[in-house]
Image (cartoon, rainbow, N blue to C red; front, side):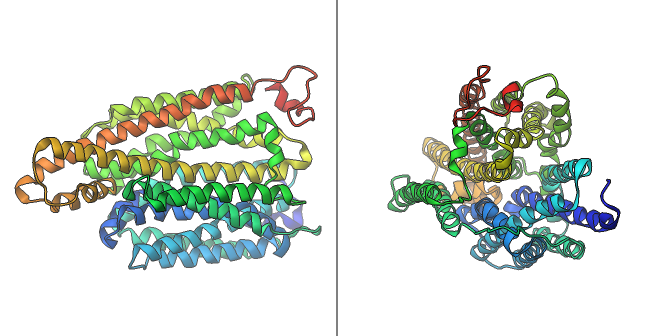
Amino acid sequence: MSTPARNRPQAILTLIAACLVAVLLPTSLTGTSVALPAIGADLHSGVVGLQWVINAYNLTFASFLLATGSLSDIIGRRRLFIGGMVLFAVCSVAAGTVSSTAVLDVVRALAGIGAAAAVTSGSAAIAHSFEGHALTRAFGLYGTCFGVGIAFGPMMAGALTDSLGWRWFFLVQAIVSVVVLAFALAVREGRNPGPVTVDWAGTFTFTSALFLLTLGLIEAPQLGWGHPLAVAAFAGFAVLLGVFVAVERGQQRPMFDLSLFRNRRYLALCLTPVALAFGFVALLVFLPSYFMAVDGMPARQAGLVLLLLTAPTLVMPSVAAVAAKRLSTRTLLLTCLALVAAGTAWLTVIQPGQGILGLAGPLLTIGIGFGISNGILDGAAVTSVEPERAGMAAGMFNTMRITGEVVAIAALGSLLVSFTRSELASSVSGSGATFGAPTGDLANLTVQGNLDAAVQQVPRTLQAQFASLAEAAYTAALHHVLWVLAAVCVVAIPVLAVLLRPARPGAAGVDGAALPETASAN
């Protein structure tokens, strides 16, 4: 990469540090899903506590992206990068040594804040270290590293969980963080000389609203959708979301410029990853538990099977870049949604004992659809607004993408638990057998991937019968969820088709200004 000679070694070390982070942080999300059954068995966790292991990390990651972006401009990108990685490393050590799920949930939430700080300051450091074509190549490699983390995270987690135990999955993250910190010493310091402030009011209201929504989605299946806590959580979410909108509209320099959503094209590009999160990210989190519970797969094998879903995300962005020369962004994105919808519907062929060949078709279809979107969404989002607002547009787009993942994971978990409890209760009632344990508790253990633990709670003479009923209930519940996920993508297709419809020649954009030429062309 061609950088000024006096900066070249420092720039290369900066890129290495940022790329290691780009592999590490998505691995921490996707890999944790494979380790969940082992975590639940070791810490005797309930389904709620286990769901927070993933949701807490993703929630704070999404909530603090924009705030840490502003903070890096104030205190310096190098300082924030090092501070974020130190926090992430300490939390990873704590996660690998905890003795309770509650503590694990807290340290995972703190790790999400560290991850947000490292990502925002790391990408800013790359932009500060390279220029011209070298900058384009640097960010291309940076994006590829994120794909590597997503694709191979489940496999690495499975291998570590089976060979050394789930705690080493987190401890290895701490070791890698130390390596990153060694390279981080070479990162050039830089900050914004202009007046920059952190929108703490917006950060607090957004984080609190997202927390209450996630809380409601996780607790409602356990307590009942009409339970006061669930109702209060959803009501609180609505109120705080309204407060957040009011706070941002009242800011002279908001961290989340809601006026950008008047641009139909930009709004569509922000909604696309939210819809795709339901068909890809949520499955990435919950399929391993199904494979381990129903098919008895070890964690390593479950991670390998998921490569059918994740591997296309490494290949398809390059294919999409070539296709974008002949096809419009609108056509490509609608194709992505159609592929993910078809793949999730096709995945309803999944049954206990299903061979890999039977799963390859639907998983590859979903992965290809999601992978195509990765090759075009980021660039299309930034170029759909005026150049002077590109930084804000990129930050808001990434926040929407990760927020979509938070909501998708929480919603899928909620539906899966609700459907499994309902299906199992119906099956148990129809069997006429008395299994000696609350059906809800047995369903929770099944969804956690610990079917063996659920079987041990019923009388020995009924264990085989219960295992058969539980596998059937879990499979039926997964089928219901898959149809819901397919429906989300199908509904999104006409909505996005309208929003991405090309403007008439000479027509003004919906925000009162002409759309950029690149946006209108596609």
